[in-house]
Amino acid sequence: MKSGSPTITIRDVAALAGVSVATVSKYVNGTQRFSPAVEARLKGAIDELGYRSNPLARSMITGRTRTIGVVILDIANPHFTNVVKGANRVALAHDYTLLLVDTEENPARERSLIQALAPRVDGLIISSRASEDAATWMHELDKPVVLLRRVQGLAIPNIGFDNRLATYMLARHLLNLGHRHIAYLGFGGATIDEERIGGARDALAEAGLTLDVFDTREPTALAGELACSRILLGPKRPQAVICYNDLLALGFMKEAKSLGFRLPQDVSVAGIDNVPYGEYVEPRLTTIDTQGEKMGELAMQKIIDVLDGRAGDAHVTLEPRLVVRDSTARCA
Image (cartoon, rainbow, N blue to C red; front, side):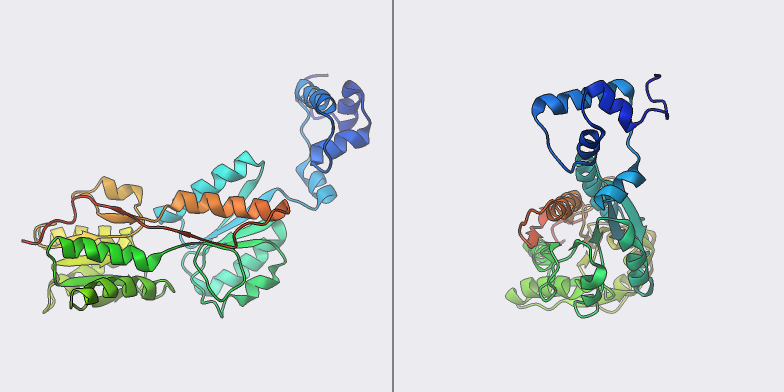
């Protein structure tokens, strides 16, 4: 028979390996292990014949699709691209594939999209801005779920990030550079925004200073552009600005230069996420590395562990890493 031919069946593999059809089925579907010698014969026969199992038939036997759903807020945001990249790396290593859903920062669509996705996958990795009270319905999905956010009052495993420490570190960095009038450009639509405001306020309070807070409607570069003029041309121009994420910071810097400001001489700017673009703009963006790829890797491994009956830590918090570049400098 020609290798890879669609006429090759599980019976052909059984005949070549000298085992029963049931043995081949259990091996292919991963429902039973055999001796190294038998498994070697099975693998050899499968490779020689070019046999490929039918994923649909396999899922009917095992109840598994070998697919994990990944729900992100915005595929255009490089932070979430990094998360998907990390998750996919682990999935491929364990013979899983990803089914990706982009909620496009639309909370109204989030629940219906996730509920439609759940029956098609073995587990779900979810990035959501929903409050803990609003997310209790996720318990009803009847699938393993890992949230990409620190949550305290929701009994769902999560991979989170210390947002309060992140902005505290940025504020301390700016204070050490001599800045005293520091502003924060946030995104009030995110539950973590208050944590980020709190961290910056804590650092400034230790120095006897207060934080000026500005808000945007979406966490995008365009929103950063639109917010820039009311911050830098307002009555209290800050010496430095901490942005909710790198996209806001990049948009803010673009518009600041258009308005005639020198960066970082006239105003220092910092972001959060450490997206790849930040290293290739002028000036290069000071930021906090949120370890997006590692977050995706840990979330996927946690899902696979649950599916395989292994228990691990329910809550994991990644530590922020300060990345100092050219967009922040000593206050003139």
